[in-house]
Image 1 (tube, rainbow, N blue to C red):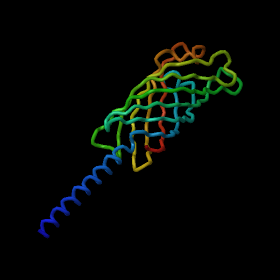
Image 2: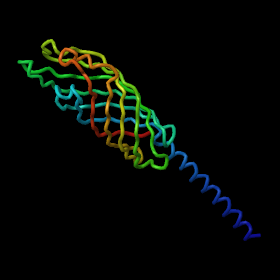
Image 3: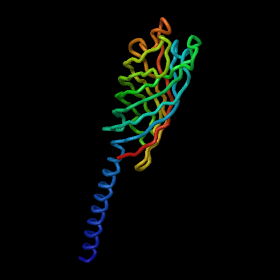
Image 4: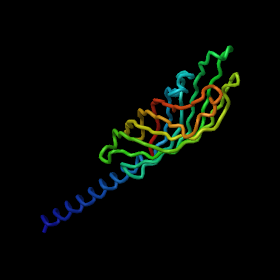
Length: 199
């Protein structure tokens, strides 16, 4: 009888411990469903636009929702600043300040969470403000973009960090430079570091 009581007690403790571990796993699994992070780096235009601009800083703030380990949704504010190098402008050239937002769908390998590689695509809308004297060649404009991103995220506890590269395809011509070149083909490429918190 005494031995049987010990066995029942041990079984009850094992069930309780398993239940506690399962609850902890569920709680731990919830961490990382939402990430908020800042990003900063460098960017420049490509193609004909790249011939007229110089590399400059880029920055942003993003909210990432991860409903599953392989699928994520990201909403973000983004900005950048690039100088204009145009010999036709005798004074100091203007700068292009870009500010806007984008939405991104991200895909990741389902078995990797601590170190998570990803690719993503989405849609963005930005306003390009030409600051300074444009000499009649450059004017402020609104642009639609298709961001294509790839990178690595490092997740540990309540912290997240990462590296990413993004190429933004300009859906229509870059109106801010219509007076500068006939064919405003090109896009916007940037590389950035991210740092934030997981909830």
